[in-house]
Image 1 (cartoon, rainbow, N blue to C red):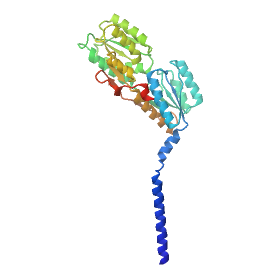
Image 2 (image 1 turned 60 degrees about the vertical axis):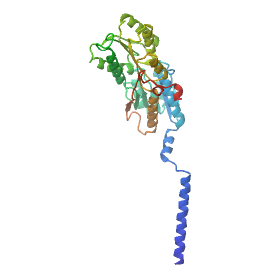
Image 3 (image 1 turned 135 degrees about the horizontal axis):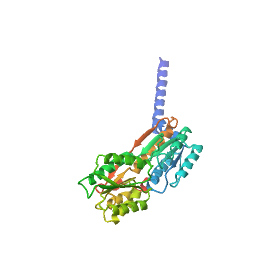
Image 4 (image 1 turned 120 degrees about the vertical axis):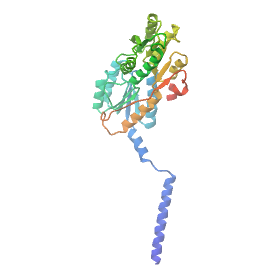
Length: 338
């Protein structure tokens, strides 16, 4: 009997000791195996960004966000800047295929130039995210604007101001960037699908500016001389369209010509809305794109799937900015993203 009581007492003390030990462990927290696996799987990976060029709002904004995440999660981040040269971009990607980083972020100059290289890179085991300008080659991921939606939105706004009986005329000018870029070919498709349902709208000019504000200004100045009753204009990118807006202002027609443009939503673009230079600014929101881009980078770096096996895309939402709703919440500066 005495022996049984001693046994029960010893067992009770052991349980108490185990309980105290567990409670002590809980006091110091518990390691989250998912957190550990997340950080371990990303550490020491290599990501390289090949932009059209650095030095302007879109690429500087995305790079700031990618650099910040890489620093937080412990993988390396590099930029190979071709400085607006498609040949230099081609050579950069060829070199990277040999170097075999874990992932490349590609900003395509047009839909065709890098298409074959992107296939080669994926075949070499390099995962690829395309940002905001698509190639004909579908890769592991695309994050960015739906240019067809932007074109459709711009054209619907123009129809609202310049269709028969609504404006000084039904004349409209379109300034494109580079004719083979995704932002041109898909946006024009969206524009003309809307305009085809409004046959009174006359497109009196459609010219490529090569993203050059001075060329855009010269084109619009000539169009206004030839068509002083121009009602509306659609530009492909806010940076180039500062030139278009300047020509309209210099001609004294800011109250006559309804100008629609699109861009990343930076503060300068918003200020041009406030000044009345842009009547509608379709923002594709660089801070949002940067967050989505970082999520895709982390997801792909953690995935065991081979490059090119699963292909996804996400067209991010657009913000329509006018004088009525332009505010700090809709706009950003580079310092906000660093």
